[in-house]
Length: 331
Image 1 (cartoon, one colour):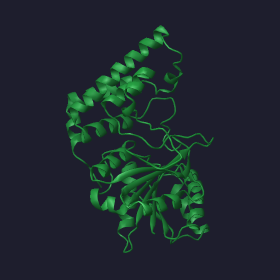
Image 2: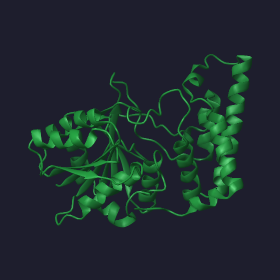
Image 3: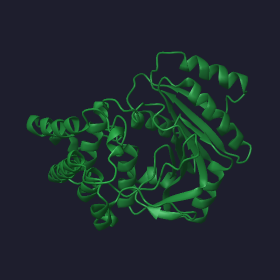
Image 4: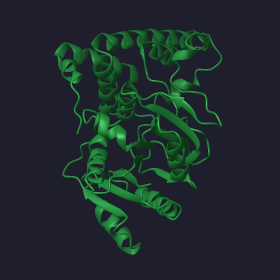
């Protein structure tokens, strides 16, 4: 089986080198693995670092370096890799999206490939993500929805229990199971999915693009599965800084808005924002009145989170920008 691995770099050369070391180990366990490494115009020492790595490891035929002419985001970079892989005479059976801030565990790729070989209806599969300390990060999830936004922002046990079928993170299991979407940090895509729905939507700069892609794949009749036997260490946020408690980049809010508008419509976005605001208000009231056991989760929220989310969407609606989100920008 031929597997094309897509890795997109932006100013994280050492993380990529560590990732490539683990990939080279997997190449010894499974023939047919090739890496399509995209540098999104880092303008640092990334390209030179990768050239030296390829030279030192004698893997010119296994690692293909692609230099992008701009930093077009995660979808844009992956699309460059996907197009390059698909243009070969011997097209890959699978395309594997792998974050630069990941380390493959033994047979991390092998187990995903074997699972998909045995289950031809599965279009996309993702593995188990663990942090550097071994803590599970929760890769399988449901699609975000109006009710999931209320559950997420309210942070109240009674609401979470009542909306159990709408909670985005799914309970982990030792056995594979079907879900709505898996993390783009480790996402194995069957070639037929790309042939059916095309490349990723480049209207997303960063975040929600894998949610959207899984939504398209599932709408086209493909199954999405979580495969716990495939394990990857993920230094979450190391390449973007999004998990740090600082003001979150505008692209995150733009991507969230785009996901709701493109897949559900503008009124769905407004409903999601309304219920998110209600949940957030209830949480803040309980926090002020100390009606509950713990409010420590608020400490991990980005600065100006509510303002940036709600005001950003309001501005997009009033300016008419939101109407431009309804068209896909597949590469």
